[in-house]
Length: 175
Image (cartoon, rainbow, N blue to C red; front, side, top):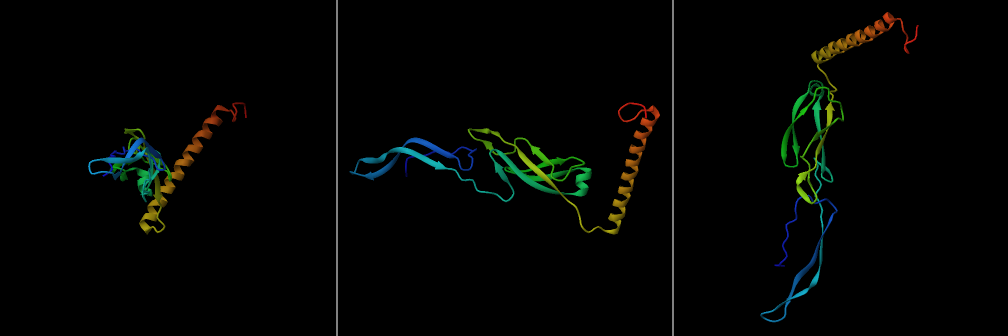
């Protein structure tokens, strides 16, 4: 037993050096009733944090990725995702784009020197687009495409009618 005890608080960063000053270590026994120390010095501990396949850490911030279907990206969904302390449910908004990042406040690693304050967890959303569609899926997506084309044509024609009705060109002058 060394006689030196310390709890390393949460929030240590990888590669960080921790120093304790004037630490004595026990030496050898000189006489039956006396102990002598090997001298007083500084103790340095270098923190090494094990890497994880699911998470990437940058200071108190944690990064991970989740994959959702294209339908969930279009319509929105609730998603169960792992964080450092377990799982949380996040709401993926409708119209989520590939590579969009969702922020989970306070679900990151503890900050150095203040373990009560935590960083954020950032989830990058990947969208799984199928390569093989059934006939029915293909027909439904084709119908969706036709609806979008009609919507675009209506938008384009209504804005050109407004301009011609006013009799003005692009910069407000007469045509």
